[in-house]
Image (cartoon, rainbow, N blue to C red; front, side, top):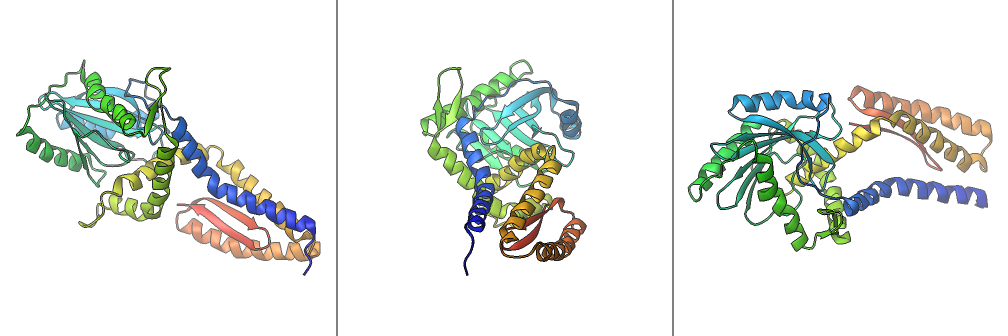
Length: 344
């Protein structure tokens, strides 16, 4: 069967558009890692939304003996900036880092990280994994991942490891006026040079403290993000239910949970323009669908086909809506049909 040149060109254009839609987010992530400038913690002004999200966890930690909440801003290298509070416990040299994503959303549970400093310069870092991990830490940093969103469970794991490590070395007191500087120096101040020594980061010199990822490392991190997506939905469900099996592969847990934190940040940015974006996608795909069949069928046949597809896919959209999916869209695929899409 002869296919007119116009139809072939539109088919190729549709193919490249959909291919770009699949590949472009990954390329953007690789490029953002390439240009990312990791920073140490510094004191920002938290928005009321961040304060509201973090308040219950900070209050619970204060009741557990932590005090002096210091607002901080932290770039975790592989995800967007996060904001939070730093609380410390001078008697054990322990600090609690409570963070929330850069774009506050009501359904995001605050992440809790405990950092203990020792007199010999070593560090104990116990974290829930959400938004943290995925990069190599210095040899003298003892890292413990906890698969829960509960600050109490995270602190219990940290305290158990802290007791074990205290038998070998003495804690370093962390006072309110030097706690932030001590953690920057002991932990984050070592993390970046460690990544530079491994060849993952490149120091640019000016401005001071500016780094970027090597292309190889940016590709590796992006590949891990893609791999993490495969297990993300199941892993996050198990973490929320606190039902991870004892034989779960914890090496993959931090990157899977980091994907969730990264995508939550990205989804917050996308929501602001989601309606216009979905409308543009619907009408753009509809135009490509019409043009792809315009040389083969009469306009009344195309309209009848569109009516059938809308009724059929409308049922799928209703099912997605009833199952709690959001940002629903109807996408027309040239030469093939249509599909219903949504975001859980």
